[in-house]
Amino acid sequence: MGMTSVWQFAIKVAVTAVVIVAVAELGKRSSFWGAVLASIPLTSLLAFIWLYLDTGESTRVAGLSTSIFWLVLPSLVLLLALPALLRSGLSFWPSLGLASAATVAAYSGMVYLLERFDVQL
Image (spheres, rainbow, N blue to C red):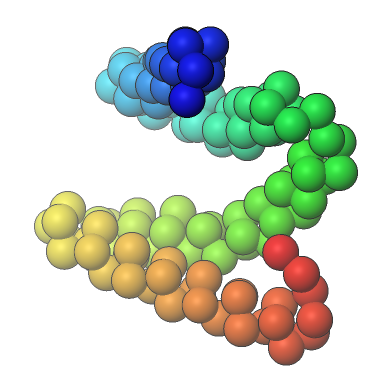
């Protein structure tokens, strides 16, 4: 990895970290604005930019975008299960663990269905 690549990697990590920290900090002040920032597909946008800058290939960006679409669907399980478990009175860590396990199961199911219907990721 050349010096330019090291600096490019460092910039990618720094920008991505700033976005994640911004969501967490904004979430402390306002769950609404934290959710707005988190719900914007910033991670995807950054990934598209980094991938395009690294490869210059629009088709790779299109492929990544399509794959993200299909895999966002099972990730919604976490966003539904976690608040339901917390509101039911279960404490944070068990709720997070169960919601995460349900999400892993949903991902597995989605990958199985996509393979069954010959959808390439």
